Image (cartoon, rainbow over the protein chains, first blue to last red):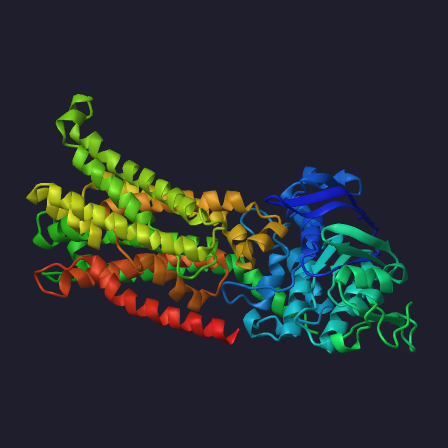
Amino acid sequence: MQIDARGIAVRYGSREAISNIDLRVAPGEILGIIGPNGSGKSTLVRALGGLRAPDRGEVLLDGRGLDTIGRRERGRVIALVPQETHVSFPLKVRDLVLLGRSPHTGAFGWESARDLDVARRAMERTDVLALADRPIDELSGGERQRAVLARALAQEPRVLLLDEPTTYLDLRHTVLLLDLVATLCAEEQLTVVLVLHDLNLAGMYCDRLALLSDGHLHSYGAPAEVLVYKDLCEVYGTDLYVAPNDVTGQIVVLPLPARLQAPGGRAKGSRQS
Amino acid sequence: MSAPPVQAVSQVTLRSALLLHVGGALALGCAALFGLAIGPVDIDPLAAWSAPADDPTHVILVGARLPRVLLAALVGGALGLGGAGLQALLHNPLACPHILGISGGAALLGILAMIAAPLPAVAALGVSGDVALAMVPLAAFVGALATAGLVRGVASASGRVTPHTLLLTGVVFNAFAAALITFINSLADFYRAHGILAWVVGTLVVRGDAWTWAAGATLAAGLALLTASARDLNALALGEEGAVSLGVDVGRARRRVYLAVALLVAGAVPVSGMIGFVGLIVPHAVRLVVGSDQRRVLPASLWGGAVFLVLADTAARTALGPTELPVGVVTALCGGPFFLYMLRRQGRRELAA
């Protein structure tokens, strides 16, 4: 399903968290949302997922207004993987994944054989089937995020939103999770929106990037068009090293400590891409 | 990868819920037989049941013990179920009708209605004694619902409603309601005063068939509402935003649960006062056995609460010989230490996380 954001703005009190954002994400495509802390990344994802109705503008799913789609139907179409999942009771992995079926089940929530089958396949896909009987709070960070992704897949969504899913993961588990998201996106033609803090990962995994600055869309396009020295230094307010790497040619972004930052903003030895 | 685990376990879910009701009913049957047998005079309930109508054991069974045990089961079931519903809604294991002040609000208005019932002014309105007394559960319902709204309103005054501010506000409100009730007690005359204080500690009082029916009917309605909310309550384990992203109408779920709890409390409080700890500890004990799925926790808390209160009331009636202990004292003596244990365990889990 194609997501269109048309001039959306979200206000918290008198403060505008995001303003006038226009985006389009097509099936089989990963859009990365990047930007400094407080630039409105999470707010944008919440608006795209229908968790927060925009105060201005509209979000369209295949041309249909998101606000005209019922809650349950939205739960069957859009799945959200948050940064962190807290559960108040010691849920088992299986219970968590089956919760993903709840937009599909009847009022009493009894799962059909098909619901169980979908949940099982989601657990296979994310390699957590062996953990089915483990309580979530006993899992490692990587296992837990895979279980949460399995819950999202059990919704059989067409749109997958991930809000900094790798924050608490080490390098290996970060790559495993994002590889899996990329594979799912390609194979199932999911429409994926991915919020990432790490600009290098964003450049590697996303087809397009949206750079937010103070709630505005600063730049939007292919990674090479967005990961630009001047723009990044300006938006993040610090001097950076931005250059293609020797192995893949992909752009590498490194923060620079104050002692290496040049007075004019240009770092010593840095190459502008 | 072997397919069976998910398949096998989940297909039992529907059957296991039915088994749960059957098992719960059996457990309650055993507890009830025990409660019926024991008292100032020990009787054999089955023999007494088939004894002639003027036999003393039959009179004791049908006239005294059966109504009391039935009441204990209804009230205990209502409190256990209400606690389980609130804990799931607020995704906080320390919630229950008592701690959220809902029992206190129900008791306060219930008592006011009871005092008002025999007043000449009420009689002048053409409301006779019996009809006026039937207003007590209704007043308790209004009190419960109003308190739930009031506590939520006060808790949200500081901005976002968190379970912690809600619980804190509820505890304060409950203490306030208990103080008001004690104050009313000082104003009322001596004979009625005894009845009023019983509301604060929590004592089962068989007040008549109508009130028992009311407790039964509200319990059935509360059970129906909560059972229909079980799926939404499960999703709420992921927090409100997580539940919304799974298509749950959190506002509707909240209204349903508060309505159900107000009904349950309105049935229970007029015949038992403010019995604490049942709604708090029963869902915990139940979760240790059946897991965290609300489709199992809710029915199990119903039966568990009923069994617990029947046993607690039996102890209250018999522990001190002829003197009867308020059942609220027994539940608090069991529940207090258990509450501290839970706090400690929860604290440790949070530290470990």
